[in-house]
Length: 186
Image 1 (cartoon, rainbow, N blue to C red):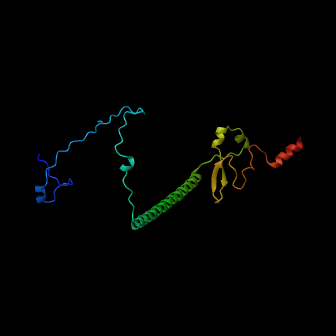
Image 2: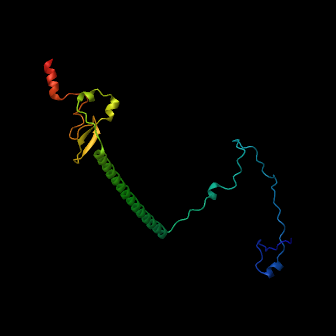
Image 3: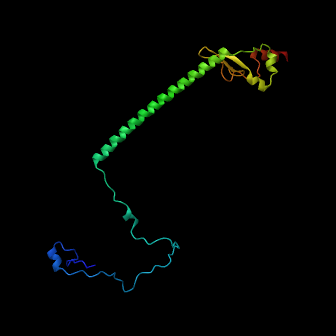
């Protein structure tokens, strides 16, 4: 291929007249120093797989672009709109969950009332029958009590009564009057 003509400063000619007056450029040959190419030996660290660092790592990072105040204000407005939408969605979800919980409670109460209405009982009148039962049998025994709402409900045999404090009923403890009589007999 023909050599390209260049001007004295090394730039390409701007017009055809300049191209006629300039000399063709000489082919460029890579210059080798008098010492020769620098040979790299084994690295001191022993990490032979590491290449030579051509450029600094900081040079590969893109320059920091600054945003204008108007762009920041627009982004802030968009964030506020998104936050408002999120808050509305969360409120809707809370209402939905609360409604579902209320319906579950109503259904449970209705189911319990219907079970109580349709149940058939075997009433135990003799105390000795209950006292002679095993633990396993006592788990099946239920008793009725009045709830705070005024409804009759089935509870476990040893469940506390509605008005009593938790510590007032001890298992196997006789009422105070009977305990006094037993103490007097001794």
